[in-house]
Image 1: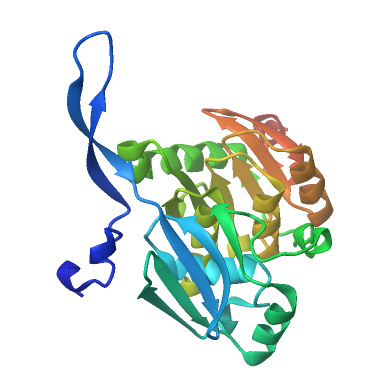
Image 2: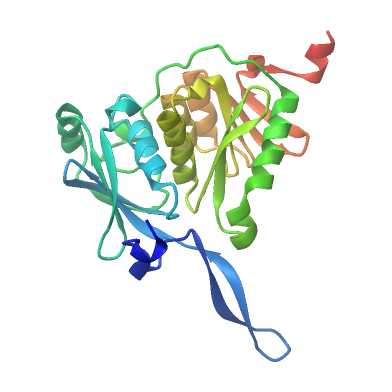
Length: 283
């Protein structure tokens, strides 16, 4: 589809970023400048014709977002249950019109009333604490990585953040194989959205998340652990610190939680046995 035919053109949502003008104030005379800013658009999730939730997201890789969100929020038990995704222009944003089996739609109808969330909300479509704090099924124990693989994946994630290089306003998530080679990277104004996009991309490509690990540029909140574990991810690494609840969730789900990844240092908060350290490799 040509850009001029894109249904989102009139809304200015065809690109994840755009150049904008602004006035810089200082002790000198005001100056008119231009800079690239990240776009943010309301994205409505519509399941079988019924509105579920609205999130604020970067208008890119929206099919990945639809599949990843549906899986990590427990709307479908398997990504293959997402039968169709249509990205449709709405009055002031974008609709993701998603078709799922009638049985899944019925369960969703019982659970959610359709909520408006903040940017990348991690509690989308839930109405009580039990739903919000659902502990995922315990993940498997097949992954082993060397600590250098985490350093390589972190460096590659930073290098590939072209949208954030322009805007300084978006998060990134990536999926790396055990050797530290990054195969999937997605950016979004919402950290949960970026992770959902990565997990959705893996599902659409037929890759198993537990064949590698996830690395994110945000803090390691419990929602990020929950989403990753729901898809069987065995190791989650984050650039920033974790919360206490994230550590407890990771431990309960059997996830190795690595945080404060900076250069060639990191903190492992639980399940360190999956990581081969420099000392252990010399033993």
